Figure 1 (tube, rainbow, N blue to C red):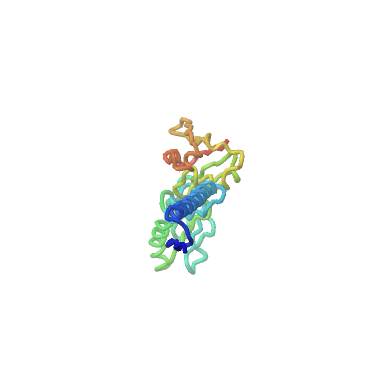
Figure 2: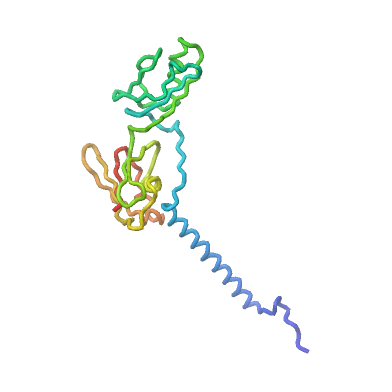
Length: 214
């Protein structure tokens, strides 16, 4: 009578090792494919980009909403910052707000109103950004003008613009910039950037920049 094998299922140790290796390679290939798909979909499926309003610095032509609690006659539903950086409000008069954050403007207006109406609660909101914009054109889902409310790089702008079209030449993206009155062209190989091979090419955008995706 032949002895029964001592290994489960009748498999030899060598067979068990190859089976385990095969399963590990299969899992690794699946994980790699998922990671590759995720990198490719970063443009096709734009994530929400949260921007904290306190990070934004108000500039000329921006539109603000100023609410003074229980004081509708003083509150301003929509007030544009003048080219000189000033706004005008009842009781407060003309004050400069350009170069300040919304929270700084709130504190300043609260202090100025205190001698007229006592302790007040002031809320300042940026309704529309007009002073800082970047431009996106070419083979993207939504070309147009985008407010620069916080730090933004080329990839983030492309994401906000709906991602690349199937005809986009990712290796030939250009950032057009005006540097001290002189035009400048910055080449961006977006294919390398998305692979993580050239992070230095993912340029931080400045107000007035135009990103061209051929």
